Image (tube, rainbow, N blue to C red; front, side, top):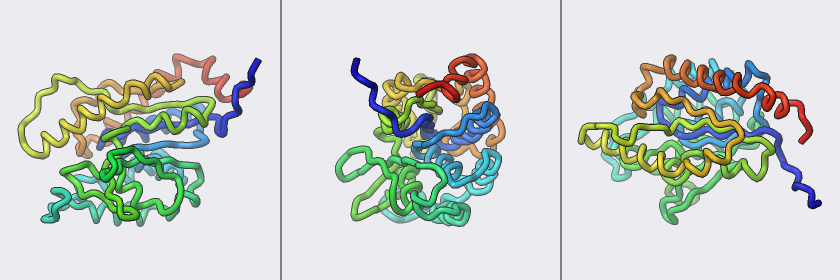
Length: 268
């Protein structure tokens, strides 16, 4: 019988994009810690990239929540007259730079993958080495609303355009993959026709369409189902969103005690 190739990591954690719904990721991390689950590697997109970077940098779930509360996109986004987007997020970038202890991926306490969309070649790109800050901002730069980030002469935008749920980069490296998807939404949702609402709705539709296979590849899928009414920039409801993530993670974990024990203590 052929041996299964040995995996590089035991537990991987994939964090989807979702704007302000990313507060839920911090709640999920709190629940995982309650079960003694600490990932060996993290992959994050957009809001998941921010949470993943902060957690990999040693922030507690509560500290992640406090950072989001104090440095939300909506609070620091400023109108711009540049061609690449309606808003610039220089102040948010500054706040994130001041918060992060690590300047590079290599300085993080946990291995981290962040994806962004290469707008020149229409492809998803994963980053795991080199300078950290600009990659995080690139992964969060929703087209139309925010300017693309240029890295090595290539313009990058939000990773959720092509891959909002970065499970694939972990699946072949990890024995177990825990996925947190914040992309569930009502496809018949009514919205206004303002430019910002149209941009948000377009992103939501793209995000919904590119996560189906990723969900199937998770060993544990945590998908809070009561976040649909929160918008991409709904920072004022941070604690409700955080609690929703915590509650759903606890529900999922409580339903699989034997699997959790095997994941933590069983043979690889």
